[in-house]
Image (cartoon, rainbow, N blue to C red; front, side, top):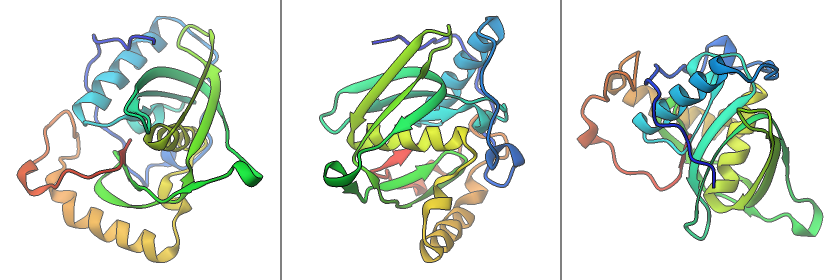
Amino acid sequence: MPTLPTNGSVLPITRWGEDVMHRLNKPVTEFGEDLHKLVADMVATMNAAEGVGLAANQVGVDLQLFVFDCPDKDGVQHQGVVCNPVVELPEGKDRRLDEGEEGCLSLPGAFTKCVRPDWARVTGVDENGEPVTYEGTGLFARCLQHETDHTQGTVFGDRLSRKYRKRLYAEAEELALDYPSDWPVSPMLHPEDHQEEEGLNA
């Protein structure tokens, strides 16, 4: 299993509503020192926010890139870096749906059910331009789909019915004051008021 870098700096997380979150991001074409630094900073930011995945546009960078450190249905931990991801989902009789809870670090604190296939495979390249493939079940399948969506300008709220989206935004608004504008550079206020959610937070 690849080892994620540990020498990054924590960056502010970009919120839903910012343009970079809602459009197709640019493919990664350069794999040098700048990309390695971005990956390290994204890992540090993901960890500071207690997330299991983070896409580049969530730190304001217009690139098709995400990092993850996430368990699958059996509790096996997966971590890695994917540039220019392409997701493959089951079809027909192999397609089983999971109605798990989902949240997004770019709409912090709010969770709701989001129906997704319970298995996914993502192919792409890593931060060195080497081909990578990741596949899995449970929370990990949800993470791979959620993060690939980000690189395409889709937030999980786009996949919800109007009723569930309205409820999600209302919950996020209630919690907004607990998240400083530069969170997680500045820590969350009143963390004791937030219940531990069982679901994806990425």
